[in-house]
Length: 148
Image (cartoon, rainbow, N blue to C red; front, side, top):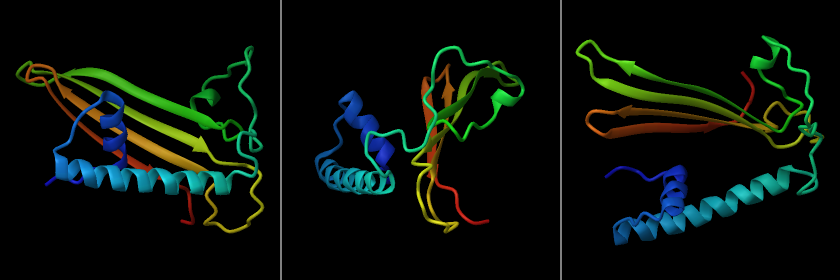
């Protein structure tokens, strides 16, 4: 049986999907536990919940400079990069794809010199659609910076 991840749970809840009963019970318990632990982690890392955590607020009138602004801006709390497109294989089958990277800053005001201190979370999402067969595949990953 395929393992249900936190993202599967959030997706299912957001679109109202119903898992089979035994699986639904496991997902509900694991999902609730994961949400609770995630909140404890985030609230424990951010000095003042709701505060900016040392991040620059995004404001209108930013003076864009390329190619610099294609990259990471650690002063801001949230960033994402999308790569999307349509492909056609050698026999003419059509596909769509999306590769997305997210960076979510937790805080810049953490007073901990450890290289294991989590200051950001990184999320990656890849999706592929077979347009002719109406099939969809995806994969997701979450990570944090660390030594190495």
